[in-house]
Length: 90
Image 1 (cartoon, rainbow, N blue to C red):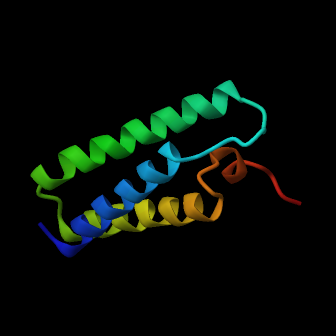
Image 2 (cartoon, rainbow, N blue to C red; image 1 turned 90 degrees about the horizontal axis):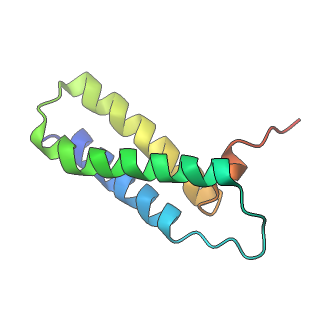
Image 3 (tube, one colour; image 1 turned 30 degrees about the horizontal axis):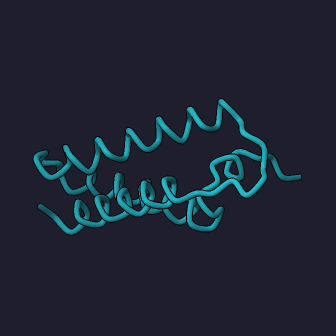
C-alpha cells in the first residue's frame, strides 16, 4: 500500500465522518441533497473498504487521493452541508 492510498483512505474517513455528524439546525430538508449525501457516503465507504485490497498504479492512487482530499476539505469548509457545495455563487 502506498502513501497515496493511505491519504485517500484518511480523506474518505474524514468525509464520511463529517457527513454523518452534520446537523441541520433549522434549515429545510432537501430530499435530493439527502440522497446525494447518502450516495457520497456509500461511495466513500466503498473506497475505504476496497482500496486497501487493490493494487493501484502510483498515478491513479495520487489522482484518487487528490480528489478525495479536495472533497474532504470542501466538506469541512461547508460544515458537512453538501447543499453549500452545489450553490451557485455570482
